[in-house]
Image (tube, rainbow, N blue to C red):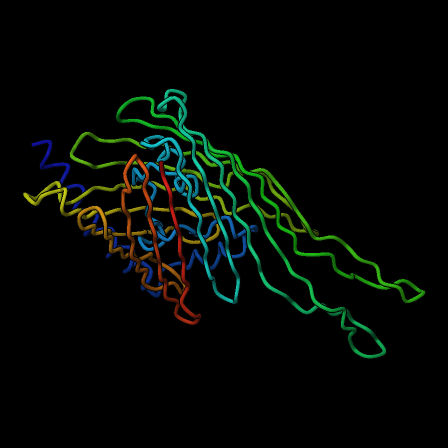
Length: 347
């Protein structure tokens, strides 16, 4: 009876909630909360999904027991059940408007996990070059050349399994966004006065992971980008704080198929971001012989993001050494598609 009830609740969440949200978003009388909440945060680079595995599944990684360093970007608690001693991941995202994201993470599990798992993550953003001008009453404007905004975040994470079913994790990061030093006026003598527009802050992530004991079903929760307010000029702003709850399960557990040959993980995340309407992220991953992975995911409601697709290859090379390559492709309504690639090594 308990097993049937659990399955029923899982299927209800899958079949009922997505259509309800979609109908709500399409209702003309529905209050457009995503518009009201837009432009309420800064440091938006902290909210972008960077890992191609997670991105191909619409970012629904909160409840997936990945056991790797990439968990620091989604739910630090999922790093707790890492099996090897060291895990390293590097990722690159070619985003819209020629913006490039480069990220990396490393996790260390000393003494077979007796002291937990320690992690380090880095995100660097290159926004490209922009033309800088200033008003000049004699020539309308004065060309001051180009400037290149950048952003950087460095995080230290820790995760620990408190039991075989419950894990916790946290991540503290230092984030910097440098928009550049700009001319803001001229003196009576005609020389320029400038001001530096660079801000930095500390932010915190928290997460928990719970294994229900029913097959491979997991529940999880995470809070990301908790920080104080910042200010460039008059208006203060906050980081893109986001609350997530998620559920995931290998649906092959409900069949008689060989789990060593086939795997199909279904993951659902419900997210409440600070600067957009509540979202539902649904992702699926089919894996053949634990080598080839095919992934797909969708987020709704959303402004422009379309379908997420991805593929992954992984192989154990012996002596506990593992290698994985992942790729994700995301479509957008009015922009070019976004490509993400990543390589992961474990030992």
